[in-house]
Amino acid sequence: MTRIGAIGIAVLSLLGLMLTGQIFQSVDADELVVIQSPVGSLTWHITPGIKWQGFGKVTVYKKRSIYPFIIKMRFNDGAHGNMVGSIQYELPTDEQSLTALHVRFGSQEAVQQQLIQTVVDKSVYMTGPLMSSKESYAEKRNALIAYVEDQVANGVYRTLQRDVRAKDPVTGVDKTVTVVEIQLGKDGHPERQEEAVLAGFGVKPFGFSITELGYEEAVEQQIQAQQQATMDVQTAMAEARKAEQRALTVEKEGQAKAATTRWEQEAIKAREVTKAEQEKAVAVTNSEKLLEIARLDALAADQYRISQLRRAEGDAEYKRRVLEADGALAQKLETYADVQARWADAFAKRQVPTTVFGSDGAGAGSDSDVQALLQLLTVQSAKNLSLDMSMPGQKR
Image (cartoon, rainbow, N blue to C red):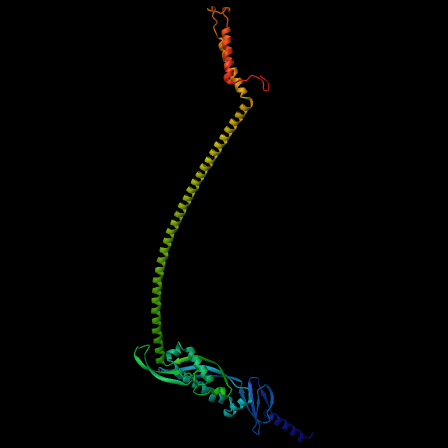
């Protein structure tokens, strides 16, 4: 190879290296790249990789970006404040919306300054009159964020203004305040003064946040005075509620003590009543027991009497039947023997006279008359006893 050829190759190589950045374009995953060819056509690349540039003009957009802001706002009480925060936004991925953005703004910086910033500033400006500085600091802080975010995404509200008389929360002096109200449609939704600009380009805002809301020194003092007044009122109300609660507590404690005493007395009463009822129950039980014993004794006596009567009746019936069976022979014989024994004893003890006058010829000392008397008496006794000395079945 000649020296001239080597130099030519070196020049071409150097020229190729110099022109490499105009032939190919590297696209990152978080980027949207548009290449305008030398003839003016636009080619969008939304996927990562090495893309053909062909000496065209390259414009790079970030798919997602964040816009930090410091915006001055004015409230309906005339106070001013500085809102410090940020909002994120995402660019569309369809070529038609991207082309519309690129044609009108031409760069990422222009999109943020001329589109995002304008929309956010206007939304913040239109939100300020919807509340007072004190409301933005306290009770309507969440509403403030919601109003700004909603107007950024969907368009600013159509509002109505009216003047009202209200007392200054610090001085207590009446003053005229311009109240701005959102105009609502028939469906109850806010009416919009203009269509959503960001939505028209396919830009999606999200993540709106406020990191600080600074007020003018006079406003800060007013807010602090209002807060102090509110705190004093709240403290007074809290003390009043505490006093009421203390009074209620004392009253409840007194009621509790009275109730405790009453229930203690009721408990004593209940014990005494229970004891009396128990004693009464015991007395009734004892009385019933004694009554039952007496009843059982009476029943036993009745049974004894019936038993004795039946026994006596049985004995009498037995004796009657025995007497009917043998004619009371044993009794008659016993009686007869007793009579004979008595006469025998009398006869043994008789005194016989030695001389008997008027005798019928019998010898002196004869006891024939006595024997005759004994026979008569014996016969008489037998007759009286109805004693039949004959054997049963023997003919007389």
